[in-house]
Image (tube, rainbow, N blue to C red):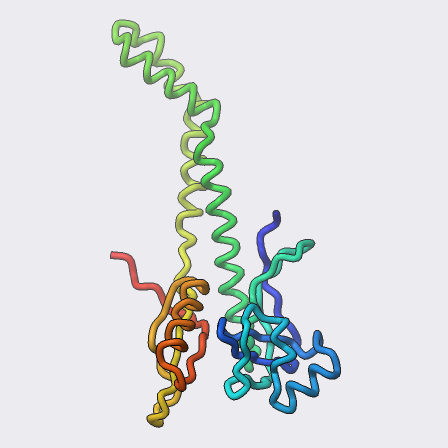
Length: 229
């Protein structure tokens, strides 16, 4: 299947539906007139069908105007969840990051398939080296193939392409952060973070079950990776 490509929408109205399974961005263009009026009145319960949650928190849900960004596979139904940004530059920056990550994953998979397959020139060279070690007395007849031009060029070209793929290392990573608002005037505070959405959703359910009365929400954020040693 073709690798995913970034998509940016026009600036439009979105419903940020806060559920027990995280925050879900729903574009107004997919809503019916009744669902639109309900959301504008502060009742987001009818929008639950567009999420993977089982309960809606109306006091934490809201309406926002912005640009939607996500990855989508052309010709397929596969797509990531929407992310919404109020500024076009932020949306474009996020789209570039998603494109680099998608292209990097695609290139890495492609290089791994090539790494398991040896070219005829590489196989011939390995056979020549093996014979030269096992029969040192016949070194002269074996020396010519090792210096032949067809063997030297492929051996230098293959590793160079593989090395170029390895250099494509993402500088940032997407983290899923659970935030809580304890009402001390500090606003939303980070309480924990996970590297996958599934783990973060589980932490969100645990906090809401253990600390009832405290509002919690799930957000996504880009963080710069630590420099390699």
